[in-house]
Image (cartoon, helix red, strand yellow):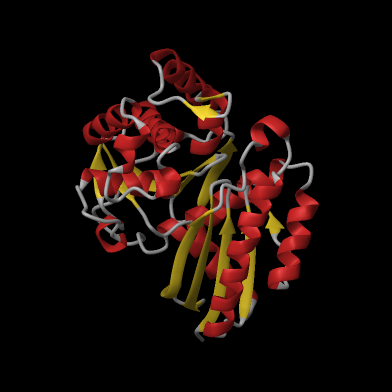
Length: 318
């Protein structure tokens, strides 16, 4: 029986909404409304350990917009999942209370392992049965504050979340006196790369990254790289979903992004304004992963943790 559900994924950089009709028996998911707002909830969390008041207000404003959309579509159930930034914040109760006041549900501040499982479900459900994609899959979700690694063959075999994300790396290595390096210096790029490599070492203690036969990349950094690789005149979900980007092309794009200025990156037609300052770090994470595991290409998915949240919301409402 099809159920109409709403799913919200609140990360470090963006908050996203999906309203969908889901059949729990078949796993079929039909979008009714899917949207994303850059709120930068994780602004300064790595440095202060707290959610900034202005970041909270941006997030609550988006929640108010989403509440109206959910009501309009008549969703039976809403599941709100919060990830890296709200896990790390000492004042996360302010965030929880604000969300409850607006949406009437308590945000689930999930663990990295839970985040990884939801991402894997959302990304791989429609890949099962495809002969052109060898298993096991390595699903990589490059977020703002963390990156999730999940290896599985139909279901999760091993998962790990590590604290490297496009926002966290940018703030840690490229922000000085409130300004982002434009472009980063060679020393800053080297330091960022060392940070990523240390995190990959940590991930490999839990997840057999090199056993994967298909790399599936999720979230805004990866989808934006696909859009750039295709020279899209605007962000196009249909063109991006299940596209493939070669290792050589990812390397070229990463090099270009890391050596361009803010103004130059902002002119890329498919670039969301909220990603202009952090896309270089996100691209470097993807490139480092591909080099670590020897991946010749990445399969890009627009379906990710948000779809996993919606699927589980439908199961919970049965």
